[in-house]
Length: 318
Image (cartoon, rainbow, N blue to C red; front, top):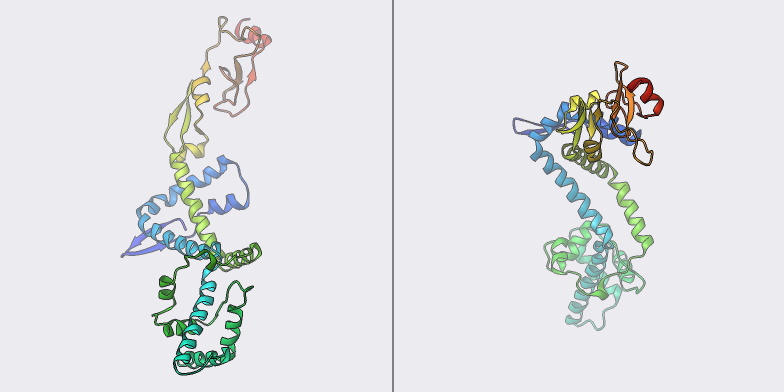
């Protein structure tokens, strides 16, 4: 998306800039990439800036989704670990209630039966499933338990006197090192891959937005220079000049050392050690011009040649 406009209080978005996709799929030179960017900037950047608040809010929502879900993966899927803790707490509570009713040392099956009755008031769930989950939870080698049915999780949280599972999480933080499960690298990798596959569209949108914003700030903050008759001067960004090829990346060395001079017989063409310090090239009209540093001719873009004694005697000092 690159254009955001406001009409009757509603935000409208258009497709992402072609420059991003084209540069991403087919590597191009910085000059060509900047040309694409300038065209996009000219056609829609003003509208993007006018609707920046709406654009920022949309981007913020995407980052919130990404951050929330990806953070869960990085910390080792604590939700599944908390399912395990929720189940153990529920079995612990039902065991105490059965003991208060006179049942001596209630078995896992009996506790699971009671919990099944409680859960089935809102969602039919067998005693065997609850018992299997409990057996996994008390297994020392079991790192986590995942209860896929949200209704079961909600019913267990309600049984423990919580409004929902979120409240249970908030009031039962993991603050003991021994309670934090050790997640193997393989498990983390599998979780990460699953997350990326599930949310690849969201991640691509976030990437394109970030790339577009980064490109915008790069263009506006990048320093530029332009050739003016005999030397380079620093100038503000101009998309028209960029398309024409006259706008260049700012280089301090070019600003200070690259000048066009009028060569004559008194010009110092060589240093004391014999090294060349004047270069020459033809302009668009075919006339020879002389410069104080090596590089490309500012008008034609052709590589300048080092001065020679032959050139001096033939064209400057016959």
